[in-house]
Length: 312
Image (tube, rainbow, N blue to C red; front, top):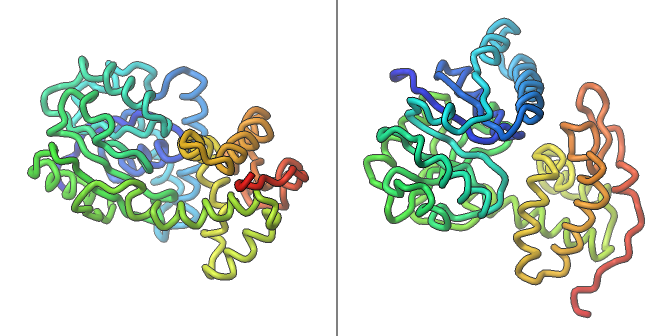
């Protein structure tokens, strides 16, 4: 490994916590930032779950080793602490353009000159908010897949303003945390991973909203075609978190898509507002047992909704 880096991860949700843990597991000095104490307490619980996943899924990882990585993460609710002496800041705040712009604007005044900024956005283009960073030459997209201890790829996507030397630097940095860097040669909305994945999921969401088939049938057919439950669209959204699904679909709804608008409404009113945000909370489209295994559809997922006809 190259020299240990000081890295802050902004946002300690599902993927932000995974990134922070991954960095700590590979020996980097890590600070995890979120907006308040409740979010930090949730992040600490999330990190403990991730440590268990490493022990369960990766050969040769002992409980002591996994626990040591979790204990090495520093948590904070202030951007000033997160910025202090950071070689890299990896942003994983909600997939909302205004939240991202606001976060970078507030962060900018605390950053050392050396800091490179990396956004884990999954659908937005880094050019959409590069001006808010105050250092577009040291800013680019760095998109991780979910379950990064298994799907250990990171998409590296610069803007036209990103210094080419910084691109090479962050490609090397990815390797110091056991990640395989995937270089994109130009900006592309949804990147490679989500260009494949979102098409699959959007079709499933639309068929559910139109009343073509129920969730269980759609997931069953998808798993059969893909040869894996990993690409069962609704199960996969539970794994990622329904908050992420909501932000992404809300962006699509804003374009006037009636199917996306109805899916967003159902997510918000029937799931998220009731505290059911996916596997992490024990219930989303599916209900999960204490080991995180799905036991069947939730009541909200089984509910009969009026179908939407986008042609009317």
